[in-house]
Amino acid sequence: MKNLKMKVARMEKGLSQIELAAKVGVTRQTIGMIEAGDYNPTLNLCISICRELDKTLDDLFWEGA
Picture 1 (cartoon, one colour):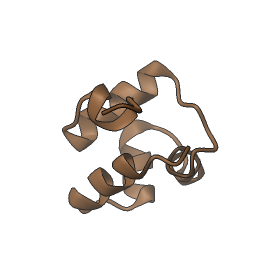
Picture 2 (cartoon, helix red, strand yellow; picture 1 turned 180 degrees about the vertical axis):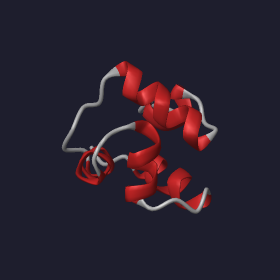
Picture 3 (cartoon, rainbow, N blue to C red; picture 1 turned 60 degrees about the horizontal axis):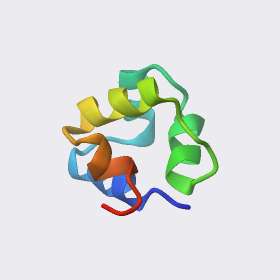
Picture 4 (cartoon, helix red, strand yellow; picture 1 turned 90 degrees about the vertical axis):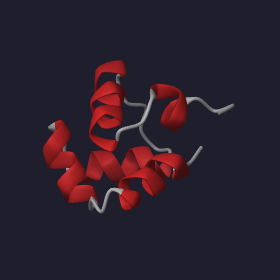
């Protein structure tokens, strides 16, 4: 399942995949795979992404939200 919420939040912050990846310590490919729904990130990575994007886990990673 694609994570469009994460992509939108990243774009709202004006960050490229490369910039977000650098901030959370992963590759651009990892960010792209998360957004495409092809990678299930660890909880620690989810938390790091949420902090950088000023969102909660529910905002970005909970399917019902």
